[in-house]
Length: 270
Image 1 (cartoon, rainbow, N blue to C red):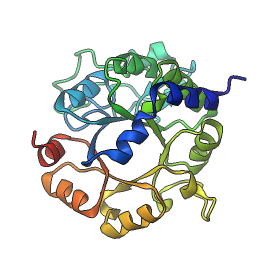
Image 2 (tube, helix red, strand yellow; image 1 turned 90 degrees about the vertical axis):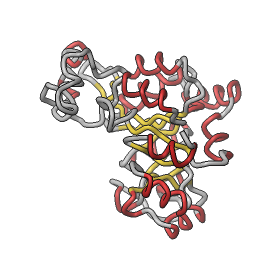
Image 3 (cartoon, rainbow, N blue to C red; image 1 turned 60 degrees about the vertical axis):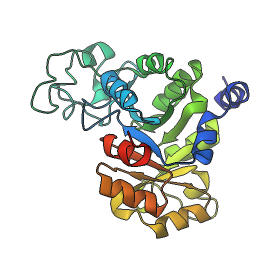
Image 4 (spheres, rainbow, N blue to C red; image 1 turned 120 degrees about the vertical axis):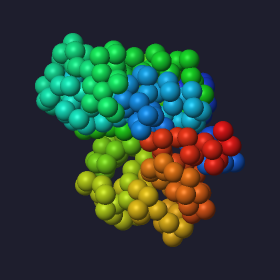
C-alpha cells in the first residue's frame, strides 16, 4: 500500500512546508476566504474561489464530500438542497448527476441562476490552484468516510499541494486518522463542539496544529489557553470591521471571513 505519510514529508522536503512557515511567521493576521467568498458568490464554486483571490485573501477554506462513484467534490453540506436546485444526499449521486445541478440557483435573489455555476470536483479545484501556489488551503473533511479522506489526500498530493494545506474536521476520530495515518497539519475546534473528542494529555488537542473558534467563544482568555497548548488560535467568521478589530485585539493569527473585504480594509488597508 502506498505510504502517503512518506509522500507528504517527501513533498515538504522538496518544496517546503509553506503553510507552517506562513502560519507561524506572518507579521499580521492572515485572512481566509470561507468557501471562497461565501457572502458574495455561490459558495464553494470555482468562481467564488477566484473572486476571493481577486480580493486578496491569504488562504481559502473549502469542504470535501464524495459522490456515489467515488469522486471528491467541494460542497459544505452532505446534501445539495441548500446550495443547488437539486435535492438529496451527495453520496447518492454520481458525478455526472451532480454536475446537472445549478450551484447558483439558490444564491441571492436569483441573479446567479442559469449561469453555469456547478459543484466542482477536488481535482478541478487543484487544477485551478496550480496557478496560485502561494495561497494556503484549509480543507475541511465533511464526508467522514475513509475513502473520501484517502482520495482527498491522494488528489492534493498528486498536485504537490500538501505543503500548502491544513486539514479540518469536527469529528475527532477523523483528526486522529489524519494525524496518525498521514502526519499532516490538522485544525479542530473547541472540545465542546467536536464529535468523539478525547480529553487528556494525549487526547485530541495534542493532535491539533490550530483550532478554529466561533466568534461567540473567542476571547483573550481563549487565545491564552490555546497558546499554552502551542495551538494556533484562529477564529470564524469576521465579516464587519468591529468584529475584525476585536479578533485582532484578542490575539487571533488567522480569521475566516464570509466577506473578506472588512478584514482586508482593517488589516491591509485595501
